[in-house]
Length: 481
Image (cartoon, rainbow, N blue to C red; front, side, top):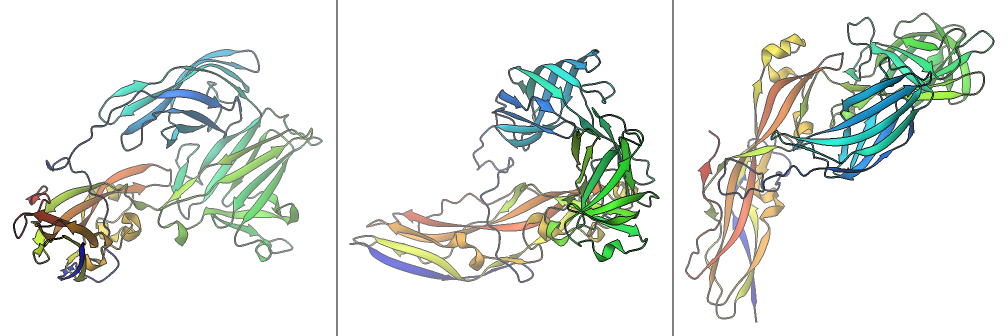
């Protein structure tokens, strides 16, 4: 027969401030800690099986399926296109280009054909690319591996090409993919593969924006558009072009547009305000939102083209945390129970904490104030307006307590004639996030590090032939001064 014994330890651990449950992650790898096993990463050569679709328009995604595409934490993936692009006028141009795809998984990549027909020198011709595609893994350790070559044929269909996507009256490049909140914008697109507009055969352009992502206002004619426009959801601005192939909308513009909700025309008015909206509360955890602008065009013959213009809206300063951490210090294991004999028949024991030991979380910074000043940011990192708790995923002002850590509820068995004791070890951990500054042109600048001091509590049921048995937890040590 086996006896069961439940122990409740009375001890406490505190961290300045009261607060939520302490975060107890898996043991973080620390290359400075010789007690931890290491599993070296190997840059396995990738393979590529599928690249589709075979017909694309500007703004479409190509999906690449294969294996062993390197994870972002270990390196970067690049896609190589090599071959020939023959345009719709029969002119051929060699292609040998490297592009950066979006990593979805070790078996899937996507690549956007944007902002124009990148296979063509001028980027504005329909045609066909014929050649091969390869994937290259670029490891952070300097290693390079590449995949097999996959034959590929890509035909370019009628498209809308973004000619201008940038803050109004700015010196940014013509097409940006990121900007700041509360920024006025100018957008221009040009249709290719459709007939040029005339008075008898106009082109109808429809610009669709989400009101929660864009601050849109009109100058009022005989009615107030804001009285009928939704505060959330889509609003469409239509322009009927009678000359050329282009359409434009801008903050402070002077052109009149038709205004639609769904397919319902509600009037026409001048667009006087077109600004990115403030970052909403629900997007604070990720630090940004996507202010996508959808544009569609139709010619008099019914031929169409469309594009989704991606614009990522970020704050001027943000915290980016990918889970990276380093063990700074391990304290000696503490015996938190009496020595427990197994007796003649052995026994089951369990342990939980009632009295708490707490430690205080704390913040420190390695901040490049001079670089921040070039973006108009304050020199004090605490004045950047960073949502540190959202960025790190824990309340940075809260205490971490052993009684709130479920990892300390453990149980085990003591064999007959053996002894056991419960131990607890406290570990100080640095969680390190990057501080990034952004400008209205979408450029980012590394401004340093935000360092959260956090704590981990590790329990153990030690066994031995004598009382008390020694702990087998890692030896105490300070790994970062």
